[in-house]
Figure 1 (tube, protein in one colour):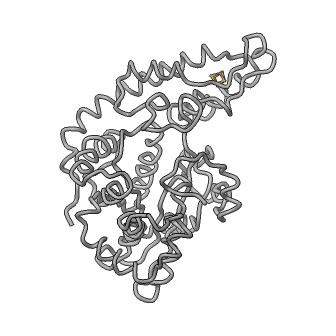
Figure 2 (tube, rainbow, N blue to C red):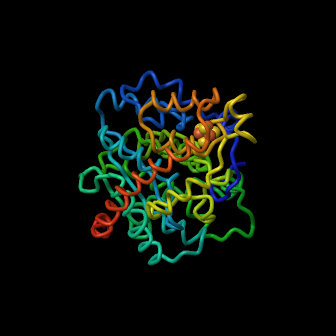
Figure 3 (cartoon, helix red, strand yellow):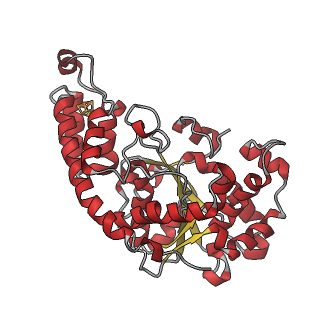
Length: 365
Ligand code: SF4
């Protein structure tokens, strides 16, 4: 069982086999201009993404839904979601961003007002600074607790879901509190509400997630089918991305500061943190020259792959030089440190500007 509230590390291949997620590579050739996260295999899986490709090709309306649960500071791994939203925005999608304050309350005990403040000062600020255009008419960011349309839809959808089903999907038991039990249905409504008549009616919708969120996707797709005769819902598509590795080698986590580079870090802090990152280097320089390094086990290489280096040829060169033992980790780390400093110097200025306008983007329903 995979569960969106646990932090167990995931075996991506097993997941695709066990839960029927399809490999994203099978679709790459059909995309005119895939995002780097797609072409580099970081987005590794999908469900029914063919519908999105069709919408892109035929320039039809489609929606992207990507929630944020305000519960801590955003780290550089979270940037991946915003990068995808920006790509979809440029490709004509309607973007829906629910702020999951109801989930934050039920799962983490964070009250609505604290969630609202954190969403503005941290999440919306970073989304703006990373380049998502909230002024565009195709972006809606809202608080679940203030969205009556979503709440009403969740209540209606709940009629065709029973406790045994929730137990089987999420592992809920007799001591699960009722708010926690109900909140997945709010998320189902978050994903399906762009297909209501008032938002343009049924349409292809994609939800880009980490694989830990797949239980929500499966539940939503089942419920969409159950309400097909009422709303003519199109079952949502989804994509699945790998998680970036933490600096110490495990999962990067906001609750474990030593593992993470936060988007609110100063350029100096980010630089220092990169230098602590676990590499795929060998026990000694002599052995590394003989055997080469292991970029596939290297946090530094992941930083370049996911975020810092857009040029595929240059990335390939670093990969090859690592593998054949002509580049050593010291040189590679220094280069990455310089790149992250440049990124954070620019980004922290953008964050300052974004912070001044972040409270103006929430949509009132
Ligand atoms: S040379 Fe670079 S990519 Fe290779 S293991 Fe060392 S730090 Fe990682």
